[in-house]
Length: 106
Image (cartoon, rainbow, N blue to C red):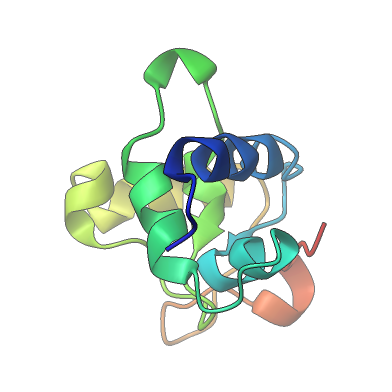
């Protein structure tokens, strides 16, 4: 975990705020953008702590495998899926996001 969690979280929020509609970013990818490879879990902590008033597109942050966030994050995985589909994100037959098509790497 980075030494300055508050500063790290702020930088995570800046990156998440830049993810364009129709694209997704992986937790680990965000960590790498911040120079913290292996920091995917800390990015997850930041996402769970994201202030609602920032209106971040948290639904655009997913696992590197294209899996959606755990069900407790949005209350139901179908909520996140519906939000992404409304933005044009496509899913494979196994229910994962087509990461080759939709991955945003900043």
